Length: 383
Ligand SMILES: Cc1ncc(COP(=O)(O)O)c(C=O)c1O
Image (cartoon, rainbow, N blue to C red):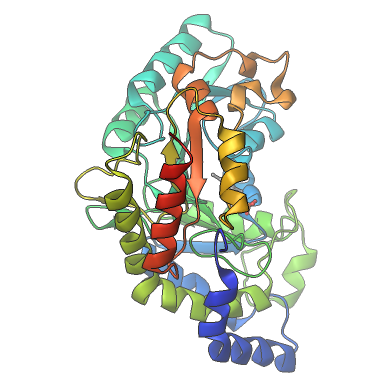
């Protein structure tokens, strides 16, 4: 059994994907061009924002958003403690100080009450200026924006939605990657919408920021005349080289059609099979609030305290079932932050989750029998 079965997906989408790849190769248009534009327009329309700018990966996407806002030394950026490293790495990389905030034990997303507490502490200490929040749509579930947005407004924080895992989720029909002042996503292969290498995108309704991002993506080029091929060599600011390859855009087009047309429904069906089969066992299951939909980047349960998680993973592996631990270490305890102000955090929920979470095989192409086998093996080996 595969943790995320990209081979099965490719077998089904092979004719369209192969055709798209061949088109790029025979056109020799490997960087930018109409396929990139088409993908950007398609994704912007789906998400419901004015601009989509594709880029090299989800980490660059977060970094460039922070660069556009001139976030740097002396600035405080709030980040959930339970997330992938990039969410906090990027603020630190641009020179700001990430402050880690505890998460809700049922949704795994940012706890809004803890957020306000942390902001107030930073203001009282007076060492840093609160500038932005990186909210994360963890495991496919959009964060609690009804609670988060008013706090950002109250304290004048810019909201950066890290939707690397959340693409395709929604709150009452409003899609992930539309909640931030700037939102970002990743097309890493195992993500809800993944390409065949690294890739990412940035979404915003702000024309000025979109223009700046288009410049920063290509070495700070002058974007005032988009049709001038020489503009790339007129560099009016410092930027980076972060473009989505045209081949990846070509692969993403048929994958996006499948994603939108049936994969999101199918992965939600798989999640409900898991929930039905595991509800009577001694696990904490992921909680999705009324009106919210997840794109199920992961199906992550909490094991009862005291269970030997490594031993259980070993037994599952012997039965041919891969499992993963997302995440084993809170952000504030990552070695990169040792001795910095980012290492000081009050996050007991994250610390407990890091000891008890287990992510199960999850993808839209899972059969009911596979889900049954996972649930049965899990129950048998965790008593
Ligand atoms: C929450 C989160 N943010 C950011 C990223 C970074 O994305 P990428 O790997 O495309 O740089 C990831 C990727 O795992 C992620 O899970």
